Amino acid sequence: MHKYRDLKVWQRAMAFTITIYHESRAWPDSEKFGLISQIRRAATSIPLNIAEGSGSSSNKDFCRFLEIALRSTYEVMTAMDIAHGLEYLSTERTDILLAEADEIAAMIVGLMKSLGWEKAARPA
Image (cartoon, rainbow, N blue to C red; front, side, top):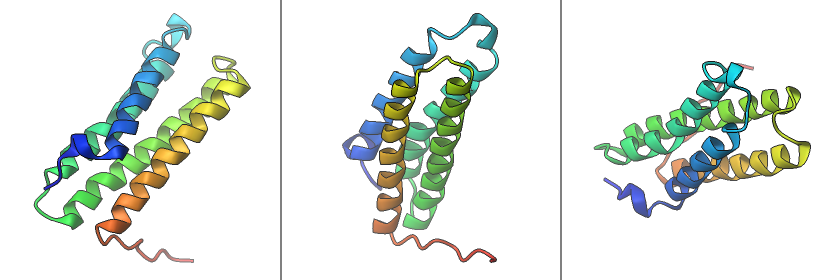
C-alpha cells in the first residue's frame, strides 16, 4: 500500500485537475453538459484512480488503476485538442497544458514500470 499523497504523480495530477477546472470556467455555457463536463470528469479521474489504486493489495492491481489514470490523461489531451479546435484555448495555452499532461502520463508509466508492469504484447 502506498501513501498516495506522497506520490509526486498524484500531486501533479491534482494540480493539473485544478488547472483544467479553472481553464474550463471561461468556456461557453453551451458546453456545460458537453466538453466542460467531459474534460473535468476525465481530469478528475487521473488523481482519483492514482489514489484508489494506491490502496490496492498488490502491485498488479495498482497498475490496473494506473492504466485507467493513463487513459484518462489521454482523454483530457484529446478534449484539449477539441477545445483548441473550437477556439476555447489558445495555441500557446494548449501547448502548455498538453506538455503538462505528457509529463503526467510519463510519470504514470514510470510508476507502473517501478511496480513491475510490463506492457502487454499487442497484435501487430
